[in-house]
Image 1 (cartoon, rainbow, N blue to C red):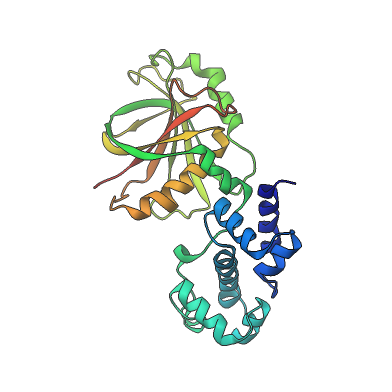
Image 2 (cartoon, rainbow, N blue to C red):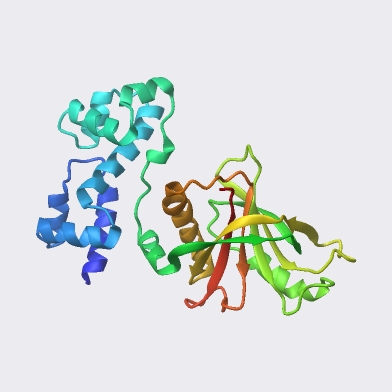
Length: 287
């Protein structure tokens, strides 16, 4: 088994042992590494040290216990393998910006400080995200005709079924631009939670003339956008969005007042399951 595969396995071990006192040293021995080499390999592949990652994951998981159970803080500390309640409180304060008692009393925690598990897929996003500086572009208006639908983000199926419906019926859309230009728009309402989203898949048209009743027209407004590139399978585009919203945008001053973003599948897009496909992602921004 390659060293990379062993590091992937270590991520599973960490998740399985968050509620224990298993240490990074224990995991390195289990995988046949010295602590030094394990730490170097782990950080090289994940971008974070195993000690820091394990600590952040323990605290992230403990937040749920603090908020949603009546367990005493001292018991939660021991559950997650901390030697003393004081060491747990210090780590919690450092990572969450507040101590566990205050978080429990207020009934909420800063979700931006929580760390989701690193997985094989999240590591693979380095292969899909084109991390060059995005291009700032002015576009629009763009006239689209297509099919809207609602999607629960917890669903395991991809979007191949609605896309096939659009492709099968594209010829019925009058005054579409030839060769066809395909778009996928995600939009939401100001009070909408993060567990669901509206999708709209469409072709660009010259005008809204004689639109068949089965289709819906939407206009992307004239707007300034950040243009990112996604390389690889279309169903992995979420990894690029993760990079955009969790790594790139937090370090900028761009404002995000708009309630949509979209993808454009241009001449470099070679199909949804082609590793060499490149699609474009547009995030509307204001400086």
